[in-house]
Structure formats: C-alpha cells, structure tokens
Image (cartoon, rainbow, N blue to C red; front, side, top):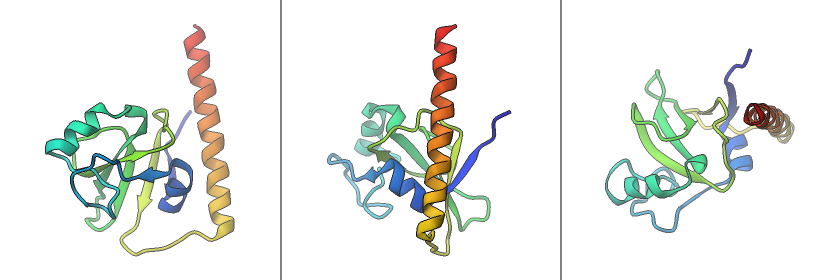
Length: 130
C-alpha cells in the first residue's frame, strides 16, 4: 500500500532545484513561478511535464502546497525544476509561518525522498517489463 509523502519546502528546494525559467513573463512566487495564463501558461505546456509542479492553496487559506504535475483547481502558479518528479505521490508543505528544517532534519527528509523515488522508479520498471 502506498501513501503520499509529505516533505518540507526546504527538502523540495534542495532536491528538485526549482528555477526561474528564462522565458518567464512574470515575477511571481519569489521569482520562480510561472503564471496560470498567457505566455507563461503556454510555456508550462511546452516544458517536460516531469519537471512541472503546481503551487495550490491549502484548505486553511494560509498554507500552500506544491504538487507534481499541472493542476487547475486552486492553482496559484506553476514551478519548473531541474530534477524530475517521476509522478511520485508527493506533496510539499509550504507553511504560512516561515520555518526551516535543521540540517539533520533536512538530511532525514532527503534520505526519505530518495528512497521513495528509488522505490517508485523500481515499481515503474517492473510494470514496464510486463
């Protein structure tokens, strides 16, 4: 049985390496975001989908979440990362109140994330062989 992995924004930044796409037209979400309309949205549809993430509003109205892929409901913006997500069942918590992980906490989450990605890729390889 699989379950969604939830990681801190620090872990997302350290592992997936989001960046400002050179063709971005707007300066949103700390300069990393692509807008949900116009040329930015067109750009999202031309980027490898395995590198696209959606920032969505949380239920509380204060927190946000980063989820793999292109989503339309409650979207705030899109992000592009250097490393792929491989459609891993993953959510990134972006808390309204800024917090950072300790170095040890970050290493723990990075290890947990790497293991989840390895298991996910191994399962995908097994399915491809069938």
